[in-house]
Length: 275
Length: 321
Image 1: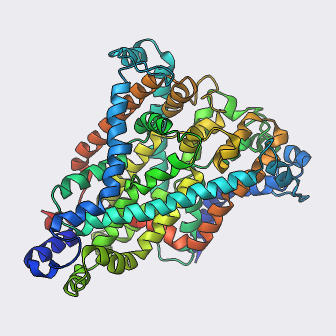
Image 2: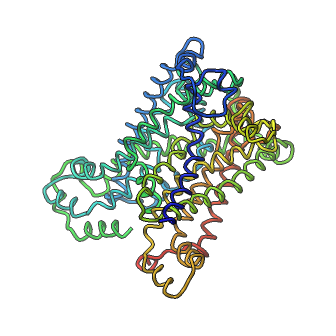
Image 3: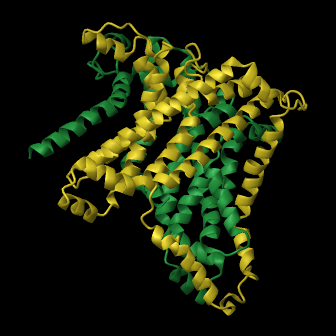
C-alpha cells in the first residue's frame, strides 16, 4: 500500500514538472496584462479573452484566421500525399517482386536518416526555377512523390504482418496486384493509414523550418510562421497575446491527442520495437 | 523479416497461370515498377538530384543572383580556417548533442522503468508524459520557453518569491541560454520513453524470476537482464535522438530571435546554415556546410553501427542467421 502511494507520488511530481509549461501557457493566455507581470501563480485570478482578441489581429493586414486556413490547406495536402504515395510504395516493397527491389529498399531506408538540410538549398533552387516559392506547392507536391520515407517504412512493416494467404486467395480468385492492393491490402492496414495521417498532420502543422523558407508574404503564412512574428515583439506586454495564439496553434494538437491518444502512443511504440 | 521470406517462398512455389489474363500484369516485375513510379520520381527529383546538385554547389560561389562559378575547395577552407563563427556553431551543436541526448535517454529509461508495472494508472501516466513530445518542436512551445526563461519570466519571479534573487534573464545570458534549450529537449523524453516501455514489455518475466531465485538484487537484474535485452531498443532510440539533435532548429531560432545569440551561445549548426543560405544567400557556402553536416552525421551513424556489435544483443539472432 505505501509502496503504491510512493509510486504515485513520484510520478505525480514528474507530471507537475512536465505539465507546468502547458498550464502556464493556458493560464497566461487568459490573464490581464498587469497580472502577467505581477502574479506568480500560473492560474489567472481574473479571466479575460482580451489576449485572444489582440493576438488574432496582432499583424497588420492579416488575421490569424488566414494563417489557420493556410495551415489547414498545407497539412491536409500533405496528409493526402503521404497516404496515397507511401501506401503505393510500401505495397511494392512489401509484396511485389521485381528486379533491384533490395537495392531500392535499402536506398529508401537510407533516406530516413538523411538530414533534410542537405537537400534544402538545391530543393529551394529547383522550386524557385518552377516559380513555386511563396506558394504551398513546395510543401505539398513532394509528399505526393513518397518523400516521407519514415511512413513508407511504417507501412511496409504493417503490410508484412498481413498473412500472405489473403493475397494468395485473392490472386486465385483472379485479382491482379492493383485490385489486391485496393481491396485486400488497404482495408487491412487501416491502422497504419490512420497513424500515418495523424502524424503527417501533426508534424506538418508544427513544422517551422520548411514553411519559414518557402513562404514569404504574410498572406501566405501558416500558423507557425505567423507565430514566429512574435519574436520581434519581445516586451512582457506581448506575452498575453503571444500565449493566446500559441494556445490556439496547439489546440488541434490537443484535440488530436484526446481523440487518438492510444493510436498515437502505440504507433510510436510499434515503430520502435519492430524497427 | 521472416514474414517477407514466407511471401517470397509462396510466390515462387505457385506457378504462373493464375496471373495470366489480368490487365497490366504481363510480367511479375512490371507491377512493382508501376507502384513505385511516385517514389522513383520523388527520389530522383527531390533526393538524389538535389544531393548531387548540392555537392556541386558546395564547390561554387552560387548566390541565387549570379550563376554558380567553380571555386574548388574555397568554401571548405573558409569554414575551417577563416570563419570562427562556423567553428563556434559546430562547438555549440556538439555540446548540445553530447549533453542532451544521453540526458534525455536516461530520463526516458528511468521513467519507463518506474512505469513498467501493471498498476492502475500507468497507461494514463504514459499518455500524459508523452504530451511534450507532441508539442515540443512547435513554435508555440519555443515561445513559452522564451517567456518562462526570458525577460521578466516566470522562473525569475518564482525564485524571487522563494527568496532567491538572481535577476537573471536565462535566455539572454550566454552561460545559460544553451541549457534552456537542453532542458526543452529533455522535457520531451516521452517519445523515447514510450519506445522503451514497449521494449521492456517484451522481456520475458522468466529471466527475472530465475535471477531472483539466484539472489540477484535489482541493480544486478538491471545490468544483466534489462540492459542487454533492451539494447536493440536503446540503440534505436540513440540513433533517432542523435540524428534529431544534430538537426535541431526551431527552438534555437525562436528563443534567440533568429540570431543564435546571446554572444552566439545558441548558434546551432542548422541555424548558422540558415543564416548563411537564406539570409545572406550564400548558397554555395551553405551547401558546403550541409555536406560537412552530412559527413558528421554519417560518421556518427557508421561509428554507432560499428560499435553496436559489441553491446547490442539480438535475442532472436538464432533464427535470423
